[in-house]
Image (cartoon, rainbow, N blue to C red; front, side):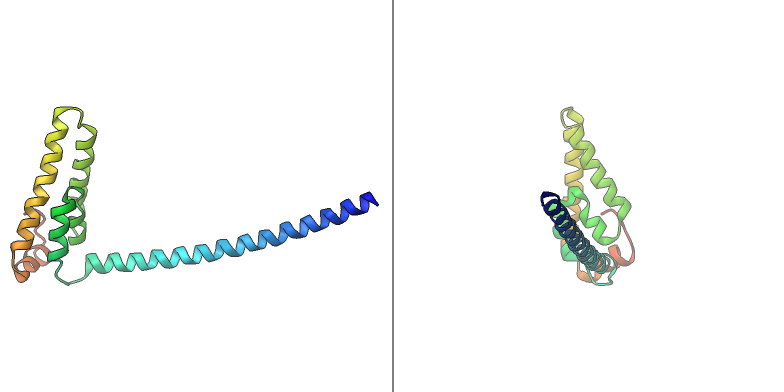
Length: 140
């Protein structure tokens, strides 16, 4: 009788394991679909923010003033190379901060976007659009 109970218990455990396996597969598929959907929405939003013809003066100006050292305002305007330069400069400045040179690198990487932010916000909408979005002037 003990062997029969062990067999029944083994069958029950196997059935439960198969059931849990199926539930895990279903849950994984749901998560996969949700992740794809979220990624697609993010990509559409990013494309709209960076590729649209709308004037991006306010957002670029504020980003340049407050987090310009990260180069985000450059990415928003579609200047990827310049954004990478600012971001890399900031990271290099952090790495070399214990040396005197790092302080100056971080200061330069912070001052340049701050000046750009002021320039962006003081230009007229039409001037900004023609200069930075149509004319593609990457610096100042």
